[in-house]
Length: 112
Length: 114
Image (cartoon, rainbow over all chains, first blue to last red; front, side):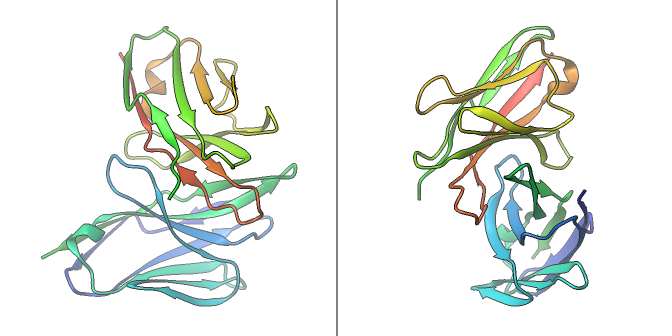
């Protein structure tokens, strides 16, 4: 099965950098996703890591260590609009079909 | 970017009533999903659908739930006799099935069971 752990809440200041951690345990590894979810809205895709290392995409970067079962999402130059939940998710592959299993999410509050 | 569309955006129903939530997945996608999110909780997998049949379902997806692709575009979730605990946001999602399983989500249907 899958188990995903993330901090429940974080706060940060506008313009700062914040790192959101995720640890996971899976029976097989098919990559790791990060999604952003604003309150009352659908999750939207941020990043996908399948190899170890850092993937940078503008203000957001995502890191993966497969040996440690660990990932983080790094948000730079925080803006108020970055206040949202950040969901770590791993594919679960069974019977020939993939589905995403989500962590509980980390609710980030950005303050002026 | 292509979108998954869901209707209605909000649905209020009485306990015991049947509801049908509708979704139009992205046109060239092959795998379809329903997820739900109870307020303040995590996004939970309900069911996946491929080649006109259910490929996997969670323990939440009991006999009260069913899915259907009645034509070439729509994908529906039916709850036969709603319970108070079915109140949640229901998300439809689809993927292309090319091995990189990025889910594209619809904007969701907020179901309130009174």
